[in-house]
Structures are given as C-alpha cells and as structure tokens.
Image (tube, rainbow, N blue to C red):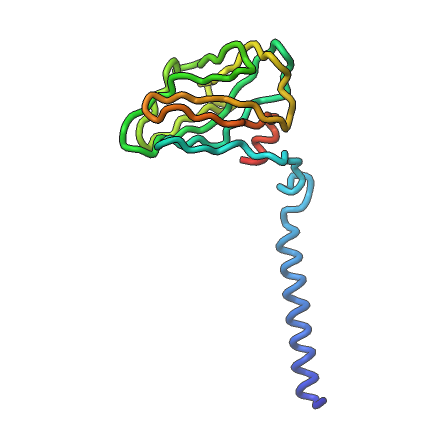
Length: 168
C-alpha cells in the first residue's frame, strides 16, 4: 500500500472516529435524572376514536380507584365538521352516575374548537359510585352520546395521572 493510500485511510478512520464521538456527545446531552428516558411510562396510551365528525383523543380514566369511590374521565374532543354538536351524555355501567362539573351541563362543540377535560382544567367529567375497582392497565367501557354524531362506545384505559402526563 502506498504512503498516500495509508494517509487517506488514516484520515478516513480519524474522520469516522470524530463523527462517532460527536454523535455520542450530542446524544448524551439529555442524560441525567431529568432525562426523558428516565421517566417510567405505561404500556397503554389514552384511547383515540372518531364518530361522524367528532374526534376523541387521549381518553383515559384516572386510577386506581376502589369500589364506591369516584374518578374522572379525561379526554380531548374536537368537532371536525361544519355543524355545531353537543355531548349530551356519558354512560359508564361500572359507575352509578356521570356528572359534569364546571361550565359543562351540556358540552357544546363548535366546529374546529377543541374542548378538553384534563386534570388541570376546571371542567370535569366525574364518575361517581364505582361499582367495581378500577385497576391500572385495565380497560373500562364508556359511551359518549352526541346530539348529531350519535353514540361512540369505547374501551378506555385506566391510568395514573403521571402515566398520562409522561405519554402526552
């Protein structure tokens, strides 16, 4: 091998090694106790569903909860159609009642305007009088009833608030 070829090979190997070190340095910048990879996340994301022009995103039940207790249903709603719709009822056979707290006796869904029921919002969907315990990782069936879009039945995961926040 000629001197020139060996010099080119050493230059190439040196460039590759520098590149590998640069990638390692850049990818390690998020390491530490507050790194994203340091958070434990659940194996289940919140549920997504679509019913006629209503998009339901990241629906989940706060858990765990014991029989007789209450919990909250968290979700995001978006009316993707051109007509106003309303969420008129939420049914859950595993609870004695579902009540809306805040400014939501009947939720009006304007086209293109999102409506959120989240842990930090004042509007809540509360499921009272649980008939069975809510176990983390389990799924419970709920039905959302809309004035125009009709009924949307879905099996919603039970998660802790921390699991859901880590997955958002």
